[in-house]
Amino acid sequence: MIKKIRNKMFGHRFGAGFSFGITSAVITTLGLMVGLTSGTHSKLVVVGGVLTIAIADAFSDSLGMHISQEAQKKTTKEIWQATISTFFTKLCFALTFLIPILLFELSAAVIINVLWGLMLITLFSATIAKQNKEKTWKVVAEHLIIAVVVVIISYFVGKFVDLVFE
Image (cartoon, rainbow, N blue to C red; front, side):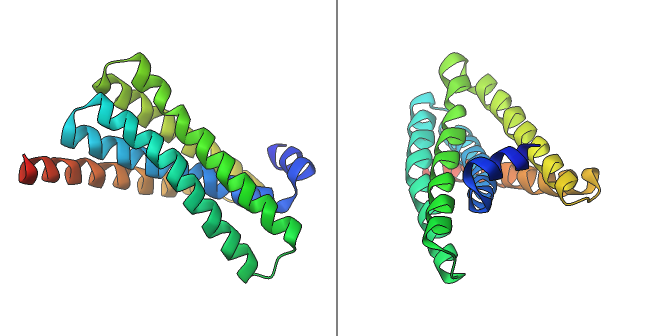
C-alpha cells in the first residue's frame, strides 16, 4: 500500500530516495546523538549536533544519491526525484529526533530516541520484507542488529573521546 501511494505520487526514484533517506536519518542521527551524549552530557551540544547532521548530511546524502543516479544513467526526472526525496526524507526524519531532546531530560530523550529510531527501522524493514516477499523477521533482525551495533559503537566512541580529551 505504501509503495503504491509513494510510486503514484513520486515514481520509483522517490522510493530509492525515501529508503536511503529514512535509513540514513535514523542511523546517523542515533549514532551522533548517542556518541555526543556519552562524551559530553550536554543538551546544547546534542541539539547542535542533530541540527548539523540533519542539514549537512541531508545535502551530502542527496548529492550522493544524485551522482549515483547519474552514474546509473537514469533520466533527469528520475535523478531529481531521487535527489529531492533523499534530501527531504533525511532532513525531516532527522529533525524528529529533536522533539524528545527539547521536551525531556537528555538521558530520557536518548532512550526515547533510540526506541523511536528502532521502531522506524522495524516498520520500514517489515514493509520492505513484505514488498519483496521475504521473511519479515529476518529482514527486521538484520537491520536492527546493524542499528544497535552503530549505537553501541557510537556510545563507546563518545566515552573514549570523553576519557582522552577530558
